[in-house]
Length: 202
Image 1 (cartoon, rainbow, N blue to C red):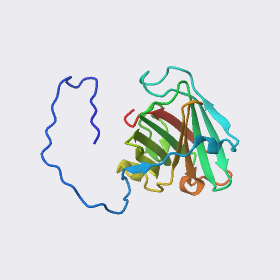
Image 2: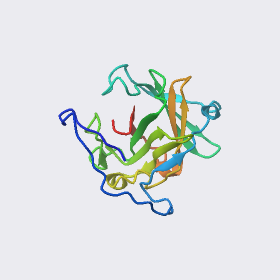
Image 3: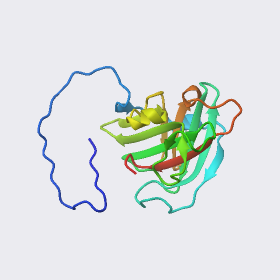
Image 4: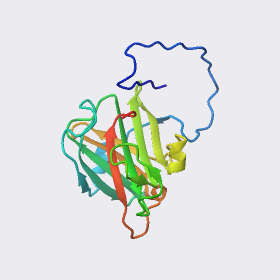
């Protein structure tokens, strides 16, 4: 359950809970919250990362949120996984963070899902998501790969929930590793993308 308000919302408000019910555990479903065991960031040291984008300091929506400096990419041939790694201006938050990679696979800026952040003219065909918060000895949240129709129903793992996440406060990085097959990358083609870091709300 997440609650947020806008800058124009009243400062004081109350929430009443009408009922609480315990339900039996069921099989994982698309859009479900996942418990996530983070990948040891040292496991990525054997990969050769290339910087594919740079970003200026202080151009985010809030100074309290992670601020990207670089976006790097590497492919792990051992399991054909594509790793996207953000180098941040400061260490990542200890309790919660969010990241997205939005990919335009076909080069057509007029189709796909409309990006909701800055660069609103951008349209994506795949979205990689990791919105995580720290629990009692674990991390939990939304992780996955989805196409625009699945994102519209908040099934952020509609194509795959197999997204690995590595957090390295010492080196100021956040990384997400995705099976290449889940991305649907074109053979030999070019891909445009947007990478964002922040929280699960911003």
